[in-house]
Length: 66
Image 1 (cartoon, helix red, strand yellow):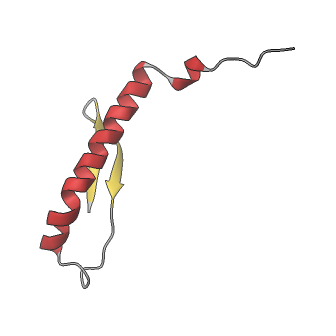
Image 2 (cartoon, rainbow, N blue to C red):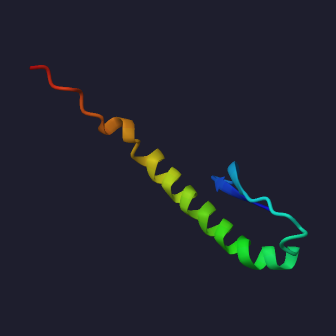
């Protein structure tokens, strides 16, 4: 089961989970895992977007020479 991480209508990545159909029936897996996968994909998308607007490497302070 997978949920795409979309940025500007393009797939950046996917959040994926594997499970044994013998251990977890598909209907139960969808009910249990899909909301969490969607939430995780949304959080990653938001974090990625924030980093694109304000890249962390621009906040690097060079070491001071003594």
